[in-house]
Image 1 (cartoon, one colour):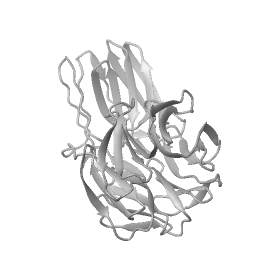
Image 2 (cartoon, helix red, strand yellow):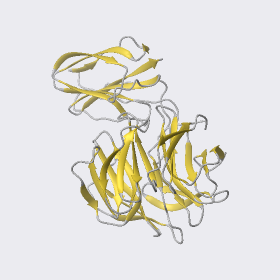
Image 3 (cartoon, one colour):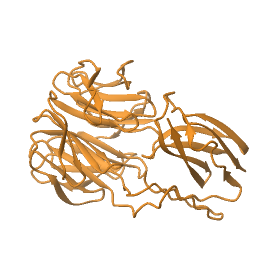
Image 4 (tube, one colour):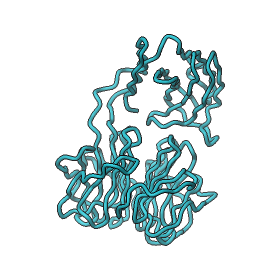
Length: 374
């Protein structure tokens, strides 16, 4: 989880979760290039591109950055494999070999699963992060190119169906739904906190997570797509074009971020201002806003009682180590109590591990560590 920072007009209360985290490292953008067969990165504000990998690749497509463990993962269509390495391209390892036409790639760190698509005929498979327990999730749908996962919402999103549909299903592949139709859907980016999905379909579009209220955000021929919701920025590639571009999430201030020369960026992924070391939460709150320690803590099965007191209405959230909201409530002013059953918004039990209980009231924010034991 990244370090959190808040401001308040009142006194300052600092809460550290575990050891202090190391200095935040600059964010980066990684992208695959299946023309020159390499993986490259640059700063989120641009700068000179740096080649991360240029050997041992045959047709790299989907890419995922795992800031939590310091790894990049990618699907290589030429090698027929899912691979990973350290963030600087060292320690390359084949996770799963013998994969037919892999293209889209997504990781569910909560359940410890990697998902990939077969772009030729369309099935989606998944496996444990060590490459074992490979299983079919979604049968052949035709040309499934990109994937995105909402672990807390229990949903898998994908583009494909013969290059005409944006769809989603439960993480186990059941309950397939069509959210939108259009020509050539490719990149997907999710903002579960805001309840929004972004995707490319000749232009960049946005809708609610259920596909309702669609709108055009940027009228450009985008392909790969990535989102930094905290900074309010969209990043994308243009098919067969030597540019990485970005804009605000409202579509304003479009700019060329990186000119890649002869390269043609395909898929991209962001490393958002990662940190090293244990998580830290810097909390700022007035004396009138208090959050009591969860009891019990550690919480067997995640079942614990949360108590607070605030002169104003509050938002109470449970966040995982990646900063994702797994459960939230809005409560009225005054003293309050909420019993949490250890389940996410989707009703699925969260895995054991460290979580953050965060209380927000206006500009105030305070938080405490919660350990779930299973």
